Image (cartoon, rainbow, N blue to C red; front, side, top):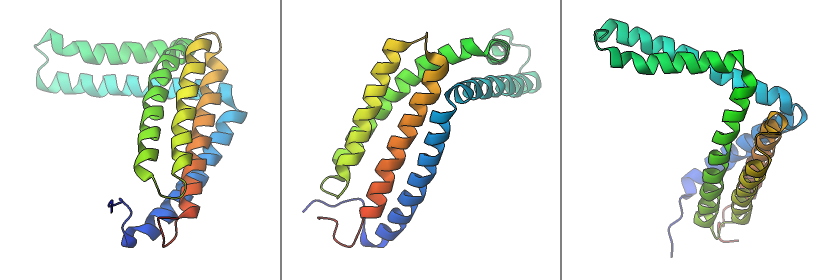
Length: 182
């Protein structure tokens, strides 16, 4: 018989953490759906700040370790400059994030489908597989709507994906019991 990743001693822990994570992902998804523009701009600004900070940290490292090599300054400069560009023009960041999310949803979809297949015949495996299919659908919707609708589409699609992830984990978490072959 096939050995499953849920040993008896880990089943209760998996059930608890899946249920909690599912509820939290549902809440995050609902917030993102009801405030899609704010979610999109917040994501863009957050990434902009992280790039600026990353550029400063990288620049500090170059300055303290090997500042005589001009090529070493390329990475800190690019991080800092792209971060400032996103902070100055957040809509440019939203469009770029849109492209990255298309790639993310493609990979998330394939990973969700594979994880769902791995969970089979565990009760609820179909929900994880469906979650993967939803992520693939989101990737294609995003691809055809980009870049015109990026401002609201990022927040909306991230919210849908989070709700889908949350539902899958919540259903799997609440359906786990002593007999994994139901």
